[in-house]
Image 1 (cartoon, rainbow, N blue to C red):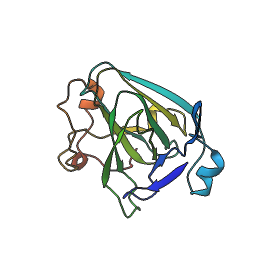
Image 2: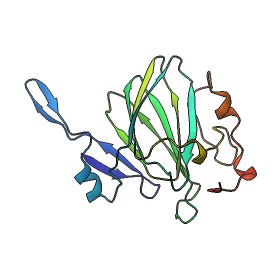
Image 3: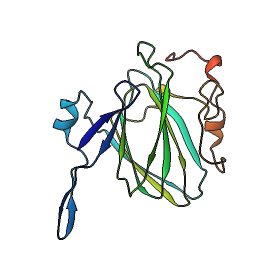
Image 4: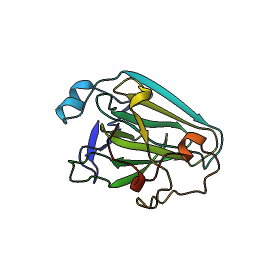
Length: 182
């Protein structure tokens, strides 16, 4: 695997290191030892699959606070997504900064999302499928979220929004919440 640190501290893009032969190729997509060698949490508590019927669908921006903070390893297995993460760690030098990365089956990239990062994505094609490994169990009492359209972040989603849940529409704007508070 090829680990490339993003502009956000501790967040990485992970590319496959393909070993081709006459059959195709082989590549490791996860290795606890390699993750730990890069200072990343390698625990996998859950693996989730998300399917989206329509392009333009947004899921997010979600995170969990301590003691149930999650790491995530995101990969798009069908279609394409624009994946966005926001650093919600008050002590971080990249606090409240965000990046967006396109993930597709063709580029075979994964995005490593550290603990206390809000995460969300937009489906860029119909019938998009996303797989993610999560480092902590889903714990509703510790779940938090941000509005996908919060003017503070000025996220440039590539498409108009076609679908979004009521829950995601009703997250507070940043100026209305205390970051990391329960």
